[in-house]
Length: 224
Image (cartoon, rainbow, N blue to C red; front, top):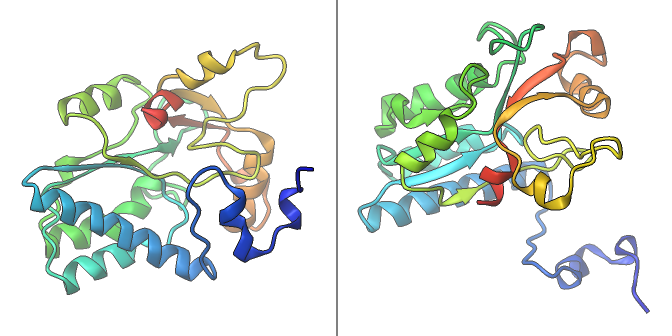
């Protein structure tokens, strides 16, 4: 008889999974584990004298500052770190990224919590950071190819199961599993469940202030 996943204790969750699972104590521990994993991959790349290419979500957010702190403390060179941002919110007409003055701007968050300090203290190069562009949705795929592929795609899972802003297809979309798995970088209308979740932290629950559209890397890039 198959047990429901909710019947497992925390200690048993890893044993119930067909893929490796590490359970951490809380959100703080998650951020620390995430940051340590990022820096370990960079160290591995540096030792092999090659670049490290990471697809990165903005959230959970704790890893960004911690990664810089670890790199500074351990004198890790970040000049060979290449980052592919997963997504960015768009303006109302879905034509441009929201301004970096907007509190929802992912680019603003990454610069203020990671990139500026990493560049000043650890050799990180701003040109080694790319984000999907609504005016050229193939730019990320081209850049990944130029960089020789991705080493690790980190991703956090949304309440409705989305990765980046790849919202789960509705029954009216008529996407096969194969089509969804091969979905490219694109402009995506954000699901109401995602807007509601993001409004809790960002706007005190005001849905009208959460953008309706985002540009997102596709499942093709994540699964690849």
